[in-house]
Image (cartoon, rainbow, N blue to C red):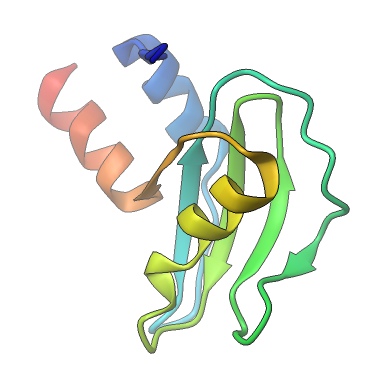
Length: 102
């Protein structure tokens, strides 16, 4: 298995570029992917939910979830559609990591 590591500088830039105000109960998530061509049409709603994949780069996908346990949905959905292993984190957690380990 190939592992892709993001540096602290990379995470800092990710957090700075992707600030988004969300409504109470919503979450803005980032799914860290191996570098690839992201071919899914965007924005898209994850089936049987209101969670949305709102944007993507070659190595991240950004999601907006609306409570009710939706935070766990983007990762398995993207893994199954893109046939890759990924990890999803709340952007607030990325910011906290950057703050703590600058």
